[in-house]
Length: 448
Image (cartoon, rainbow, N blue to C red; front, top):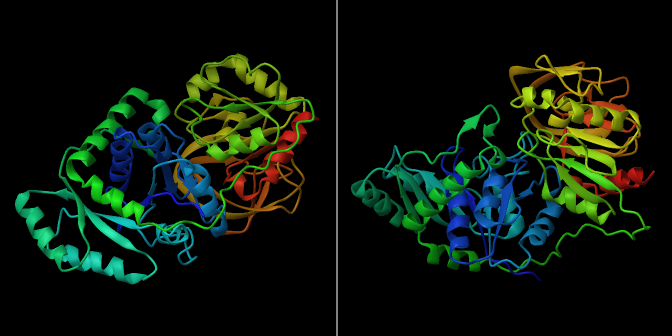
């Protein structure tokens, strides 16, 4: 049995202030000297970067679609081990999940899997007494979801606060915090959401401090901690990457990082290390060489379209990546990595490993996907089934090679991606904790 005090921060809808409250709570409790474990429901890569700044610990995702409901509590316990408190930021509205899949991957489902109390963040800017009806509806919709209190956001005045509190007195749920209307904390957005921390480190630190200060001033931290401590123990054992005996060599796996490649799940590096690799992070914007002894390359997601001129200008590294790929070495590329391996991106020369051209588009491609490996590759054997997520505003032509990476079965049937030599390149983001054999197979291929 594992007992970690915990809270899930949810809202009736997106835009209510979940990220401000969740990140602010993390910063405020960390400022009290507590070890705070940060988590995010769903596939989002960007919010966990702000969570990591607030807590000094890796931000971790809890995605019941990609990883399956059975892994949520073990993954949570793995991340929260040894911590005084865990704060889980929800996704969308409390009961919103994977399209057409009921509660699957919703904040409500994750709260039930974690047996965690929920704090509902309500945008109160255009209501007074109606807030009680809204909160009552959310609290009574699913009796297995335990809403332990409310934080009121965008409150206009003392009078407005008094009206809201009077209305909520009838609901039986305590008001655990009130945040007044204030200028937006500086967290700029663009075509895929917030600008990642790695692109604005100093400004992001200032934003996180501002969120922490707002929450310290407006929320009852003692009452929130008491609510977190009311969560019962979890019976599930913590997830751990399976370690394999070291055969004497630890192949170097280079992992792209820096401002252009910020999308990565913490468990991927842990799985590669457990499988016997030496994981070395490099920055394609600055480094002109791959790390010494590189035997395999992982290029995850991010924003290469924002940095296309700089990536293109780094010709020495592009040549090194191309030479490695042509040698047959294992290369795993997701989304941004796929674009970096293409012939060009918005007219800028890229690595040219793939005979395909990429460009920005007005259309957002977004959603969960069911996938099956079309052929054997450095990541999976043919027929391996995984669930993943697409999230991009680019178009690649052609979208699949002679040997595609995946056959997708949701929402429509199509093939996607490229498998050639040791390269596996695709738009699909996957979570390797759902299929640990992916990391193990990749490292084995790196050993040759």
